[in-house]
Image (cartoon, rainbow, N blue to C red; front, side, top):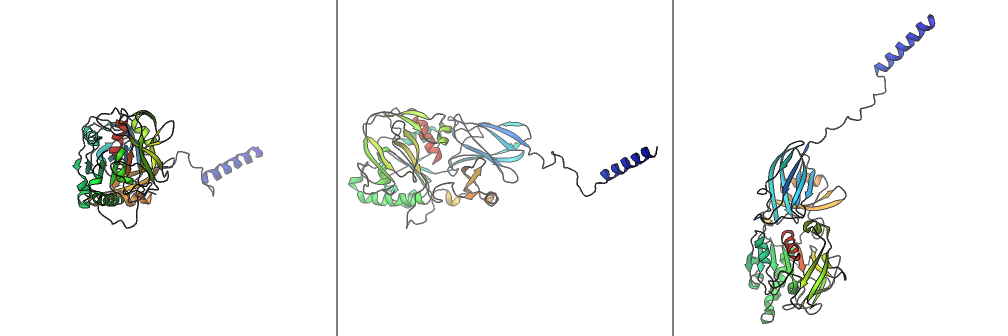
Length: 395
């Protein structure tokens, strides 16, 4: 009986010690932690301004109250689904780095609910001022207008007037527009200097086929390397007018472009007899977007690495009046994206690791796109047409 009594006392004592807590804290529950983020889904379709063309490869994003980004891209048909934090949010839709084409939408996101955005909300707006120089074999302005955007025709005389071109963000140089060089070479010396200032200060340029001469020199086209004139260093690019008539099998060489287009191979028909063939280029300076499949010859290239000494600082396009700033944000998986955000957000994003300026290239340079093909009226360019739409929206 005494043994049983002692055993009972021992059990009671042990129970008392365990219940009192002592120095050892209880093991926390695995479920204890910050509350789960409440999110909903936004579904939509990015369209051109006139609502006729879906826009692939567009960035769609928003931020939560701690400035964490929620990001996705539209597919080749313009469709997107964005997981977004619950609450009243501003949804951003952009192409390129967002400095020239972008749209902002106010939306109320509810936890575990899906909100379908109307196509009237998801049209991509033009905030850039666009100009083009009329060409003999090319009409990029037709594609611009087909998308519902506006471009102003300017002349080579305008290109020689820095004040005239500084009001624009993008200038398209149609193939064959540099066709009276021999009659007034002094004019083109001024043009070359102005285009250097334009690009170095953030303006973007597209040139097609023969108009590579604006970039590297030459008259209506370039017949050799290191031609007189131009503003891109001769060591960076050489193109000769030796391309022959025929259809080339081409490969899209850029993941973003592939996503936007929905394909990575195409045929390009060169039917004008003589076109500019890229002979060599600096791969650290230029990115190849489209190449010939069999030879790997570059057919479409771009750069935002332009810089030169002695270039004056000149306000270009809408940049002086813009409240948006281009920043580089790193997504999970070490994926970097260049986007434009309202100035007020910049300090908070920088505190989270973002950097001001694009993710690559010069912090002040605009883009230069060059394609050996174009949308000449007599040609059958097929899928190259949607590539040119991409060029327009991503300058």
